[in-house]
Length: 347
Image 1 (cartoon, one colour):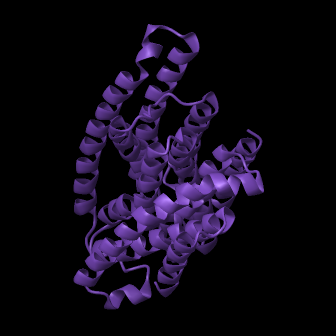
Image 2 (cartoon, rainbow, N blue to C red):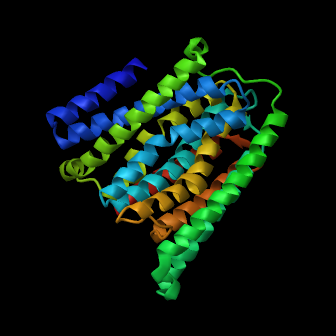
């Protein structure tokens, strides 16, 4: 927590003194990750009393706050590429990189070198992802054909966003009921120091982290263009890889820590809930919120993002759908992420 406060303070100082763009970019990226970790820490204090389902939903909801603010400020600045790649980058980072590393760690910690977990969430996540793939693919095909529907992408995206949110709400209600029935007692907290933190203190931490996430995200987005001019990185690569990894610090730290302790259901819940929530909750919400800006976010994206999302959904369903995974399958997911990141580096 002290490190997070120091990094956030450093970001404030850089903004006040007008530090060079690349310095602000690096400091704000680190501060963004620290804020995400703080959100995860406070959420575990609140959610650790309940089962993996509720804890995972709380983690993903509040842990995705940095991505929400990054996209909002990117849209306000007319940076649609950063907005799109931040969303898709978060999905790819969680579904391929973080999940893959968690499987590697969990498999190595298991006595028989196989990580086991309940099947429902992985299969549900694949179903929800395929719903997002459906509307994105249909809009992509419509745009390629340049038919009449392609001139109404915003309206179609709004209808699709509402449909995805309704389905997500129905799934979430069913999932949490199932988890409450399955969980006999609350799991241990992943962070040992969280035991001595009260509910009131956790709420204060969440409030502070939420405000910090809003400010740091704004500064981070503002530093992207100056930083890109210095290091000559493609904007799509920055959004897909750097922003995504910084914003997913919660899933990175918490998921791997839980997997190492063989708390497999909780580890999978934290990661998989984040994937599902970004695809069929955060993305649709941002589509609706973007109506307030001159730059509108829609489900019409590049063919590379469409293909990447579709193959990601199929990959995680194939690897985790049976409720178990081995180390090489984890490395396979990591390899897919590296290939995808390399492709966007040359875009």
